[in-house]
Amino acid sequence: MKFKNQWSKLFLFLVIAVLVLAGCQNYSEEETSSSEGTTTSSNENFNAEVFNFATNQDIPGLDPHGAAANTTFRVIYLMYDRLVTYEGSSTEPTPMLAKSWDISEDGLEYTFHLVEDAKFHDGSPVTAEAVQYSFTRAIDVGKSAAGIFNKVIDKDSFEVVDDYTIKITLKEPFAPFISTLGTAFGNIINPVLEEKHGDDLGESVLAETEMGSGPYVLESWNRGETMVMKANPDYWGEAPTMETVNIRFISEASTARLMLEKGEIDLIDNTVISPEVLGQMRDTEGVEVVEADGYQIDYMPMNTEKGALADVKVRQAIAHSINYDALLESVYLDQAERIGGAVPKGMFGFSEEAKLYEYDLDKAKKLLKEAGHETGLTLEIAISDDSEVRSNTALLLQSDLEKVGVTLDIKTYAWPTFLDLVTSGKHDFGLVSWTPDYPDPDYNLWYFAHSSSKGPGFNLAFYENSEVDSLLEEARTSTDEALREQNYMEIQNTMAEEVPYIFVAQPKLEAPMRTWVKGYELNPMNSWYVPFHKITKEE
Image (tube, rainbow, N blue to C red; front, top):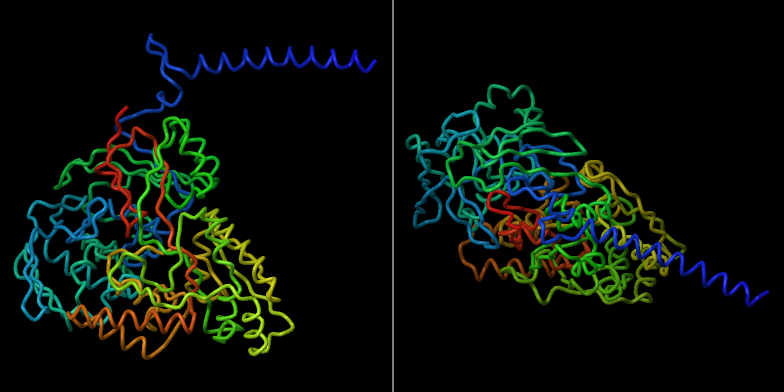
């Protein structure tokens, strides 16, 4: 009986094998190109004039002066123009609306000569008055954009020399001023918005639409699903290569991956797919994983203004509780490295000497005991629902902290809710990624550490140190690069001791795309920026 069952099983196996092979043959015939011109399923989705981009984060709003999300920056970079811009992988600003500029010997007066054929999407010219309006509105709105220009310019800094010449006089020297003008906060807005200011300076208007002069216009926006941008047919600069850009909001990374492999998506946001899955995709036919070194920092802000984390000993204990080697190996698959401060490796001002906390559970327990938490402590970590890396990091942190008697509750939020939570100071911990918009330590450290940047200004630790403020302000107003570097080093060392942030990793940049995508380069500082207007698709 046993012998007979074995033959029955063997017969059944052979039948199944035949059916499977037949199925595989049919699948192969359907998917493989033939000499007679039959296209694969992915080629059927190829359209040289339409670019499909997948991300898992919706866009909170479109106002350049109130924006705090990279998802917003990604699209408004294409809807608006700036005085200067950044091309490809370069970190050097190049002319855009400003075809040239003159700088006085004392570094205070900047005279910009504008191109004379640029027009806003409604057909009105981009003039010096529009430049003045845009920057003074940023100051009036007083949100994230104002942080760059805080104490550098005010509403009296502008002189319209003629329609296409504007002079900007700084209140004090500011070494990276030209670089700041290429950020999303430097986008030039159509001054017709002033007619729609209302009580909120037009913020409600720009939350839903755009008023720019860029290579793309907003065609439609179905929140949570798709944003469609169309090429500006009257663009003053080089004509956009892509006629249509579809920003697809796809919550599940596995879905985005499948759509890419089918050719329904051309490129996936570099923050969506985990390093492990990217490794698997490298051998996928028709898919390429583009790589670059970058200035992205993954970090953990700890709210220094409330609860147990207001005590530096608790923050130091947390820093000693994390198994950083295991984190880099298991979550980042060794595609990242540790840094001790807010200035990434490779950028001017990076400190090799900033303290790196060793994994030391005994020291962590001792510090918690000294802080009065010997019997245990419960904290909450907030993460957004758009990153497998952050969710995996949170789980590892939860396991590590449990070893020293700290219970870490993980709370996951939709991106807009998460952003509101951490900028309003309702969090204990957060997990965030940061990329600078211009390659200078001032950008990172002013936002991370200056007391004026608390909350909506992105100082998510609500950190305040008067000495750090003074060092930042001195570095901002100096053109002495040696002094600036010395100040930035000192700031990083001070912050490493006070631990308002734990810098988890500086990862390599990786993004999966179809092999038919040409001309896409990851920018080390604007890793989220995709130059849709210069990308092409070629089979």
